[in-house]
Image (cartoon, rainbow, N blue to C red):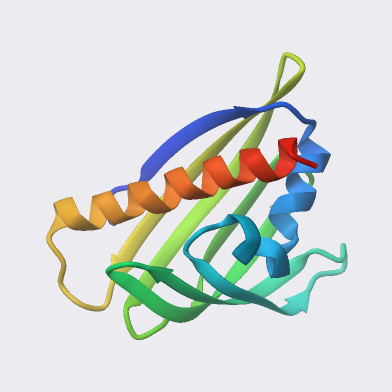
Length: 145
């Protein structure tokens, strides 16, 4: 199993407000820098997306792939590759939301594995850029509403 990149950030909102932004995949290109498009392919009984096709351009990692999502109320959402792309073999991750004071701590974990060989240090840097951009974009999107 590949190493995971983990980072946390505090957001001045409740879990429901944050999870609503996370679940709004068509809006990702507006705040998640590397995501060029996100199309919901199917939803679950709770109305939340289950399968989403992404077009990603993260510099050295550019691809189209589909992720399968599992939602645990407003506490946790996790995902895994349902249909790999030409470059992305594995893209497993999660957002864990924990109440903290007047806001919420959001922890993002991500594991990326590619179809093509890449030096571990470069892959970890790409993971870090994806995680940093996603958390900072999420914070700005939620708090700017």
